[in-house]
Length: 589
Ligand code: DGT
Ligand code: CA
Ligand code: CA
Ligand code: ZN
Image (tube, rainbow, N blue to C red):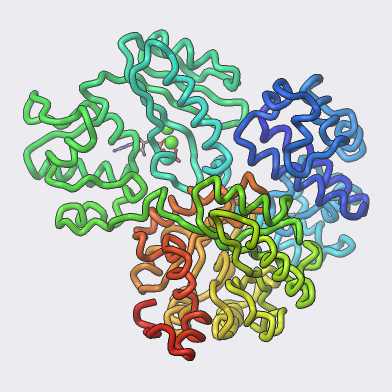
């Protein structure tokens, strides 16, 4: 069983317990689900290696949960979960994917109208049956219909962050076949798009039939759509299709280029080839019948008179023109980050301690992290009030005295109230190294009110970074309605940094916003938003999003050494300027 499937069982238990009004436990099950999903190693392998004891080392997993995992691994299901399901046999995954629909509403919908799945819900909403239910109403009915539409639009796509570990494993396995000399994942995955329709894998092999046979018989395969001599298409058990093509070494670069896409990029490249009297296809670049390039992508771009274009920006959004004139951006690299400044711990809703998070960050090569637990108005996370924050600061001082090789900064993810004030007093904010501000409630304010609310918060002299600026959750909640240009202008004026939250279902800012921010000269930061040690590696998805938005290393302030990073934050810049320590020049921020 896949980690994602295991996680879903625990997530559903949490939802069922939530329906029953049980306290605390639902959140614990949700945390277990997140922890399992984030593991790189299959849980069954952890179990085979070290039994119950090894399972207990997974964050958030105690003896009782470990025994449940054991039961699932041994029998394929969990009696406790089955019992809960029998009481309410509904499509929890489908229904909770709709914005505004949570466990309590699902319970009402099932008990009053017998709604089991999204199609039932859509019908009931269209027939106006939702508005009469307790705690719901006409507004909710409209919201549900909007939510269903939203899910439908993104329907059938998978989060890059959820599928990449599995696809990478399949890639490695194919690479390990003795008949295979090269393997690479192309398509939207290589371009690191935030969601993926299907996976496109290319391989070079003198014995394609053997590769095909190995591919279609993988344990993850649920169905074989088709299998030819050099091409196969399968559906994986997780529901995603994977295409595999075996190509000759001489045309590997051309095939890689073609199947990496995007389609629009390909069309534009082909036009350039035509203008030069050449023909470009997935077999190569040809003058008449003679191939003049195709073994590598580098050769191909060169033969077309272009600089090599990184896959992340192949969207026909000006990259080809830039490659013609030598104006391609020097994108931030996957190893360029030195810090991660949005991290939650057991002080609120994280699964690991400050030390554990610091050690994981250090293991991944980072030099500093900021602890940014939630603040008090997020009561369900146990958010910090002023007193708790001061206590945590003292604790961080203590930890820093014993930690080697990494620095822990004091921070918080401070809630922006409805009126744009912050929910922590300035006096305490002034003591923090990194103040992240974020919207976590009232997401549906009208555009003007929402924009003013955020800008007012950005004007607080202690507010350093606007976390996950648009508030979207991919496939679950659309972005807040806000005037992004006005936010950029305010960021520039106030020196507020904008975050690219790397958590796989956030990726907020998204690529097009990043590009606008870069053009406006607004500084960015890339954070994991980790709630467990397994999440720190999500930074790679944030870097990918930054690259898709044409961001260079210089645009991203946590690529800088600690002291320089701090100088880029407004309160440090201004306080040091007051003390005459640095020349504070806003234009360089
Ligand atoms: P996805 O799967 O929806 O996330 O997006 P892609 O980009 O992976 O698209 P996919 O899987 O349909 O095709 C893979 C690549 O193959 C695509 O990026 C470009 C290339 N390709 C597919 N169809 C066409 C086409 O009709 N014309 C051209 N020029 N290229 C195509
Ligand atoms: Ca694809
Ligand atoms: Ca495809
Ligand atoms: Zn947040």
